Image (tube, rainbow, N blue to C red; front, side, top):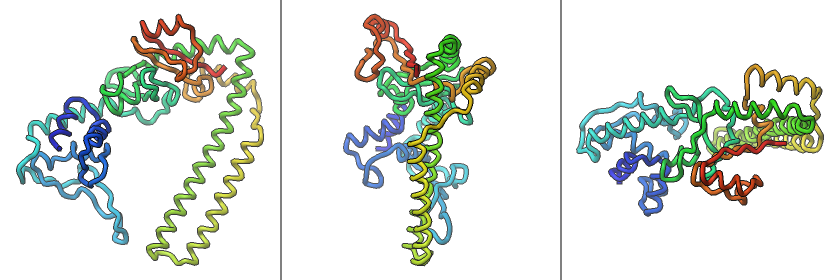
Length: 326
């Protein structure tokens, strides 16, 4: 089984694909349940299968708890060549090199909210596209299925972020001259402000619910008394109820922009000075669909109401279709 996992990974298949493949084949995982991407990754990363003994992989969270946490690889204690290997040392080294190169190539660029995050879709499989930064190459986006499962699921559908920003920027400069477009932008801004407030309150509710789970577990383990549990739980329930009522109130009332002229001026200044950012993109774009040459446009999926001539163009040449919010 281990040899099969290494072989598939070496052929370019990802952790999730390998896990799904083994599940379809009916192969039991080490735990006896279903395979998952995490288990596959641990097998690929472990030099145990190359003949080493690996210790210190995990530690207890605290002396009071039975829970453990996995330690980073640089904390492990590895003793080389202690037993007969399942995977030859050379093959193991080759797979690790593939893994490291793949991580460098596909790791999301962190620390920045990418311009078209949540707006770009693959025309081939319909999945969201993910931002990816390759070494010495400009920022771009690739199909989510291809990113996770590799070439067996879809093709990359790669698109350059800089080129897409330039297209949208030129469109917006023209759109902002249209009064009807300005009215739609102001309504969308009102909706976005309301959504942000509601999302914040929902996150607070989830946090309160997690607190409830923790104190409930503490009660079961005898760490706190029944009386203390009831008092804390009641207070938490009241807080959750207040947050839910606040969400209801926000959904019922209209949130007005204080000064639409200031809002529009800020958009124009941002466009001129900084170009397109995520906030503006989310405000003006419903979705962007990236088609590669040879793919068929399906109206039931995309609902973009394009002409037969445009559908033919997609099939023959590929295309990028932007659906604006106005």
